[in-house]
Amino acid sequence: MHEPQPPNKAGAKRTGPVDQGNETSPESFLLHNALARKPKRIRTAFSPSQLLRLEHAFEKNHYVVGAERKQLAHSLSLTETQVKVWFQNRRTKFKRQKLEEEGTDAQQKKKGTHHVNRWRLATKQASPEEIDVTSDD
Image (cartoon, rainbow, N blue to C red):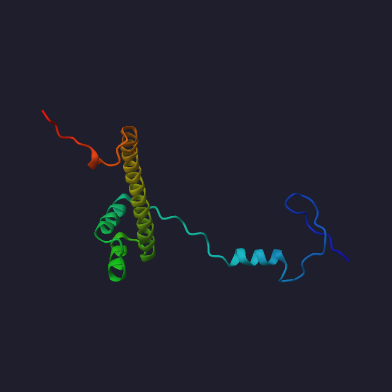
């Protein structure tokens, strides 16, 4: 009836029938997908000179396409895809930095008006226009 099965990774024996060519079993599905997948891409480590050239190109234009991207990739000994992805990541970093700066500016403005508003409340004055700063000396 049932054939003896090899132990699993934990050392315990499996229960149930052995998979005999059943292509819909979870084991065969996972094995097939693992073999069919592309190998994991190795992270690109850019050299300092490559980064400098990429940053200079980004300062001039946040988008590099077509012949310009091809030429830049060739001159840096990179693929066009590596250059494209670097620019995508750099634009994301640029937007994040811009938002952080705007958030910091807004917080600074808010802090400044907070003190003015507390002073207005304490002196019961509604606006700076109502304050008489002229002297009768």
